[in-house]
Length: 465
Ligand code: B12
Ligand code: SF4
Image 1: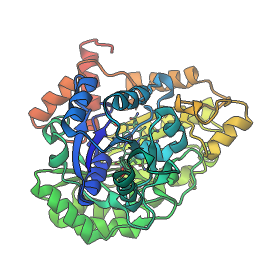
Image 2: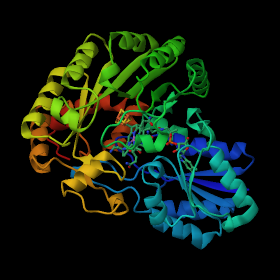
Image 3: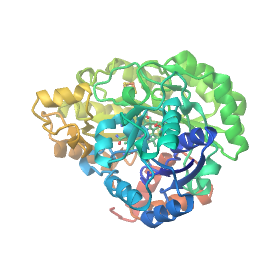
Image 4: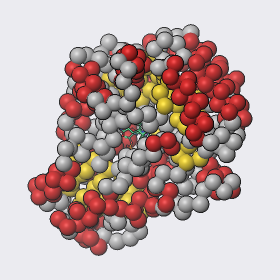
């Protein structure tokens, strides 16, 4: 059967990410014997016209839309990334009788809500596994009457296709992503057993951790290198848990260090120590990110992070003993946040950052249906929206400190220290062109390492975005 895949993500901030999920799902469908074409909307100037052309060219038996993001997760500048969706499905229907399937990380987060909003025929949750290929088979046999239920799990067994590095060049224009300094996403495990109050990852990848053999990870990266890639980013829910697995991966990829650079933004401070950092240095990591969220015991407790301020400080001391550049990620505004706790966290950030590091600060926390934080927000009277209405971003912000006051505190620090970046902060309109030029003159990922330099430069020119 002819299948048209649409990678719908057009978000360019913080940078355009390679559509690994869409390419993997397309590859799965192609391996099941279908004739698959991909329409990647990331760089399309006129998405409607591109869609019309793609449908005319492929005359599909099924159209699969890969949805990565719902919104930008930033309370101060909330931006929806799904407004186009009902219109796109309607347009497909006007051009083709093919059933429409939606899948991807966003669908894992809010499956029923996106299914209803999009008016697609099917929504697939989780990975593109045997549940997905079985649906394609049913469609091939029965067209639009492929049967119910319409929200289905993508994998019904333990296999996890997210572990593949797809042949990106077959599906998307990789030169555009390279020019934008995108790195290749690599998954070494799926699932997370922790129970942070706001987190949706359990509903995307499950609560049970499934690891991939370190030698297999190294082979996949080696293949990526032979396809011309140099920068790889581990995108596991948590890279350093189990720590032994992370260390084994580091040892397996270390022989590739002269031909590859590695990054990872999902390090839990609880398992970040000298032993792991030494292995990461040996493996050729050039940048890491630590998702500390807060440096206040009370706030960390409210977020159910499973560690306290002591562990956060210990992680910072360990990082300071090593040479890898670090982005510190903070999430302000959780239950129990006050002016004092914000001050405490910002003071920690200023102390922890070495030259070359960055603090990425999110103010307000995106609420998702089914999370403990959603319950807290409802109990405190802060949330009255129905789960479907929560597709329009809903946020939690501690009643003890209003958002403008919290933002004001962070902006004060950010004004005198360009190493602070506030989530959703507007970039100058010419930023994508700067990135492109950066890519051409040989600047390398991660892009964020150039952020303070760019801000200093713009400050010197007295430019305000
Ligand atoms: C790593 C990561 C990042 C990294 C990406 C680095 C990189 N080089 O790729 C960074 C930090 C840059 C990032 C940025 C953002 N991210 Co992010 N990110 C992730 C994370 C942790 C993993 C994504 C990933 O690559 N997974 C591996 C791939 C292989 O899996 P996958 O895409 O899910 O695809 C699988 C399935 O979904 C399925 N599938 C995919 N498409 C299709 C299609 C069909 C038809 C079918 C059947 C199946 C299917 O099959 C695939 C293989 O199994 C997820 C959370 C998570 N646990 O998934 C959040 C996540 C995707 N991010 C999210 C968000 C919001 C963002 C940002 C908007 C945040 C911001 N304001 O900056 C930006 C957007 C960037 C952009 N340009 O799109 C949200 C999206 C949902 C939402 N709430 O809107 C998530 C889900 C986290 C969350 N908060 O819940 N992110
Ligand atoms: S450790 Fe990370 S992925 Fe796991 S529940 Fe907490 S926030 Fe989510």
